[in-house]
Length: 355
Image (cartoon, rainbow, N blue to C red; front, top):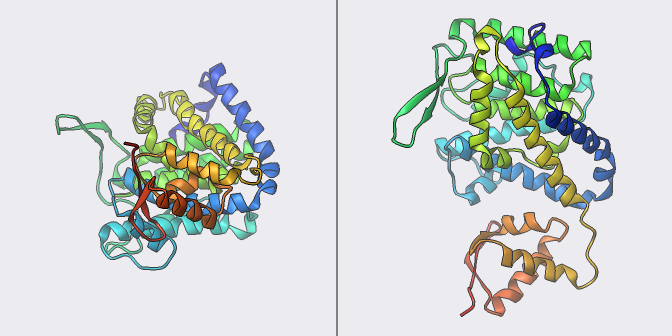
């Protein structure tokens, strides 16, 4: 589509700071194999945490809020969704499952990147909802933003409904053509594709969720597999204002192919870099000496907010097993330092502040 049309990428002025980010990401990519072979137990815990927190955070980004224990129940497939909010979250879990099943496979074992693949992801996302998914929008939509005074402002006018199918075909043809040419770095092609997808806004609902899922697919296929262990969704949530600002800066002039991709490139690759830094920080933590595990858990508890969830604590100490964490929490409860507010696998705890 517009960003991937001939000549558009070539006229973008890439600043030195962005070149540095690309270089650093290439270095992280080169260390992936070493990282992933070093600590399989830690990576398994990170994979489970990424699935849970990615599902929960992505839904919250779209205004879908469900109690954490319910998210855990159907992410672990122990229960089915009971209402619309849970149906939407369960659909995101199914879409993540499709992506995870194809990750790491060769071209023969995965679905080709086509408009049909995007439709299949959308069908997964909405499979539990009465209206279903897997269809392009049938009426025009707008990208809006709610202002502090409660009013709504139009930020972008996407491709009209009648032109969506052609636009999506052109988007994928352009991405494949640019990829095959091998001139533009994949780290620039991936966010360019995502920007065009968001400008087309091909669905009546779920466009940003699908964009975040496609980011995982495209990064993994380009060899940047960090999203298997670190969800980018919490990073997108923490930088929500920057996401919106970068899009608005890169949307201007898009319909005339006169836009600049640099603000969106800088934002998106900055988030990916943060994800790699988090992955390396988690994986390269040396196994603590005997007796130090308890101290690590105690320090983590004392550094958490006054009230915290069990998964929040586990995320801070991924190298320490759940039984060890539970044992330390029992000791702290006996000592009167913490109390359990809500028991269970996804328990809530509260620290007692010193008198």
